[in-house]
Amino acid sequence: MIPAETLDQITRRFGFLEAQLAQGADPSRLVEIAREYDQLKPVVEAIEAWRGALDERAQARALLTDPEMRPLAGEELERLDALLPELETRLKQALLPRDRADDRPAILEIRPGTGGEEAALFAADLLRMYQRYVEARGWRWEVISQTETELGGLREAVVRILGDGVFARLKFESGVHRVQRVPVTESGGRIHTSAATVAVLPEAAEVDLQIPEADIRIDTMRASGAGGQHVNTTDSAVRITHLPTGLVVTSSEKSQHQNRRLAMEVLRARLFDMQRREQAEARAADRKAQVGTGDRSERIRTYNFPQGRITDHRINLTLYSLPQILDGDLDPLIDPLIAQDQAERLAELEA
Image (cartoon, rainbow, N blue to C red; front, side):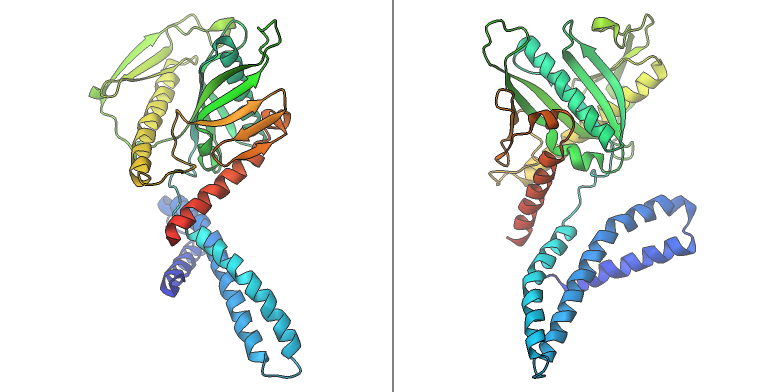
């Protein structure tokens, strides 16, 4: 049972925030207040729905003493008794602690794994898939660096994605994506298996992570890449090395000033992600399975072209809609992953 005092505190806080917005909050705190209000609104709606159903059940029970109303009251009680567990589950889900990074922009990194040129071509397919998904949701797509092979494959891509709830929707995409198909370079028609790695990192603000100037080395260089894409003839590309960890980040757009800013954002996101994964691993040390471990070496998904099949191994979900998925229709995969994560955290909360 959820403590009534906890629910009362949430509704009082929501009422206070609502009054602040109505009266004209301090402009310096307006964004913060509006964000908290938006986060609490679905929680308060779930509280009101659950409490409303409890009140209706109490009224229906009171009517059982009336001979004329007893049949209707019995039907209403039957409906409410079936509805209340569902409303309570929704309320518990709404009360689950939020990942503070869920509302942030994300840094998407894609690299080919095993499989040579076929892996690079598959990595390019994944990049297009995510770009189409981003466009369909009305988010913004900013290429930080992208290097292609001679055949149009992808050596590496780093992209910044901005919009509402970006990281919340994409954070379970991190891991090894495996493809099974006949490569364009295969003359014998044999099916090959290759892979690409995807990393989705929450963008970190300076307040989350301070990087001392003494900890980085910044080099400028000439951008390069296959096919003339993202190539220029001046030394505008920026490479930043984080000396304590050895992490190296490159940005190769046209402006050196912009490249330094973008590279620092990627570096900060990678360091922030390292901290988050260490914390998640510590919390999940005694758990055998968790959807959101963020393990970059975990094989999470298989794309089987001959059968038109895509399988997410974490939740044993198989869909026969590979062309639609590759065209950016990712919600049939993402929604069950989010639901599974909520179910796992709810089970842990109730244990």
